[in-house]
Length: 534
Image 1 (tube, rainbow, N blue to C red):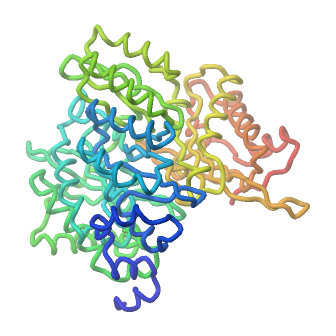
Image 2: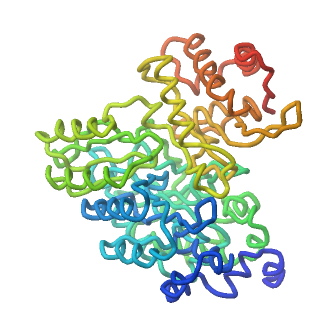
């Protein structure tokens, strides 16, 4: 495979070769003075590398994704984000599953000013899109929680800094997602990352073992264990070796669809890939044959005592939607009660970390006043939705609005049952909200009706999971029309509530039952024969 073949067949690779996207850092002021419609599409593609994407419709508004390593923010940083959302982004913001925040409605002419104001408080947007090392994730309570093996924050920041502005590592075959965790719950979902570094000890020494080649999209893969021990002092060198082995092979740049590292692991196998990494390092890594397992699931929502005697107060943010005004007031509250950090979670929630015991009730009351609860069911606290309509250019239909509707209708129907299954909703096959591993997963699509009309619809998956029982969901229905989806999910949950064994959770129930009987029950209730999955 030659590089010339790559450039002929892959437009993005050609665009990167012709001008590295980081060059736009020097040209932003000039670019922002131009009319939106006069800017070539290639330049908007390069803007992805700066964390800037056009919103839909493409009429001059931009989405800006912030880079927040580990999801860790100081109150003054949170306030600045809120101020920018309020002033430039129609008072709207979204928390993402990579512990980021997205701003929408940013006009091109204000882009340099917004980026400058973010940089003033130590926040960048570079590398949150494009073929880069994306925002590094970790446990939302890294460094604070009582039961973590060790504090990984230094390694999060070191890896972020090592690859952030290096143009070599901003020219990868595709995006590359890393998580680093020593939380025994593995709450940062290492199973679906390109590279997961999981804290372990060997011979009294702290380090990491590795999961490699996870990822979802149209070809879901669970990360495979590379049975090595990487000492902490080697972590940057190891990550570079992994990236170098992958990025230097032009075969994985020919097609964007097959450019993720999971396909290289498919082709080579873990043992061969390990050998290539060790050759790159110039040494053999120590073995670590035990694949780590999580203790269970948590998003650290609720009140949790920390190792310094203060408390974390985790607040559920349905669908990750917040206003700039709320973020400003939350920053004010954090400073008022002595909180030094606000943490973002992979379930699109947030945590005030370091709340004194006598201030916990004040925080809870504040959140309640704004419509957010601290004590929440998994349906509310663990459900996630991607950006979806009306912003994302890839999305076929609504995601966040539908999730909010489903949460409301299921709570009205079933009350505050604690084990109602979380729901993951995505607007396209990119699966940014992980619908493959949701207990219930919905993906927006279209369906052709008997009269020839095309309508918005959703595929329905069941039984996905992560953590101790990681599993890719099974397709229950294909192309359920959008006007039937709320009732479809209601009857699905109803069947579970009525037929489960005592104490049986949703994934266990789905693994046990005949899915055909479940499908027939739902179709019968709807009075419509839905298309079954295969």
